Image 1 (cartoon, rainbow, N blue to C red):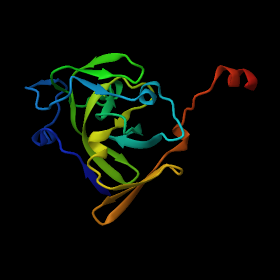
Image 2: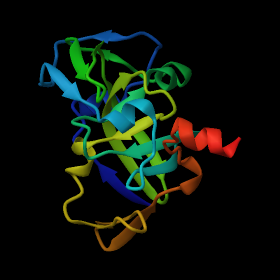
Image 3: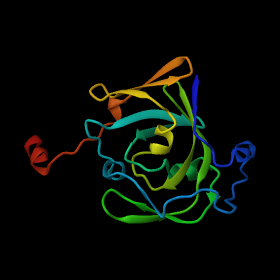
Image 4: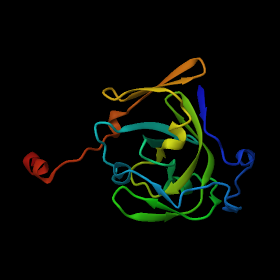
Length: 188
C-alpha cells in the first residue's frame, strides 16, 4: 500500500493516545482568517467533474470528495465525534462557504489516517459540518502529490508514489446530481 503523507503540524502528537478531551496549545498553524469551500462541497451536488470516492478512517467507511477549490482539508464534525478523533484547540477561523455565508470553526484534527483505493493519506483536517460528505481533500493534500495525470472524462487520477502508480477512480454510486423542478414534474 502506498502512502501519501502531508506535513503533519505536530508529528510527535501522532504517537500520543487521545484521552477524549480537546487539548489546548498555542496555534502552531497559520490559517488565513477565512478559508474557502466550494459550493458543490457545501450542498453535496455532484457535477460531471466531481471526484467522490469511498475510503476508511479507523475501519469506518467514509465518503471522500477531492476538491481543488478547497483551500484546506475538511472532516465532518459528526465523524470527528463518532470516532473520538483528537481535536486540538486553535484560534478560531472563518470558513467561507460557496453559497456566500461564513461559518466559524475552531480546532484541528492532526495526522488523520485515511485509506482509499490502495493509498494511505495522513493529513491535518479542519472539522466542519459537511452534510453528505465525510472528508474533503483540498489543496493541502493535492499540493503534496506533485505531477498527477487526471482524466476528466473517466474521472481518474494517476498518482506516482515512488515506483508505484496509484489510480484513484470516481465512485459513480456516490453521485447526486442537480434536478430541476420541471424535470421532477415530468418524471411524475
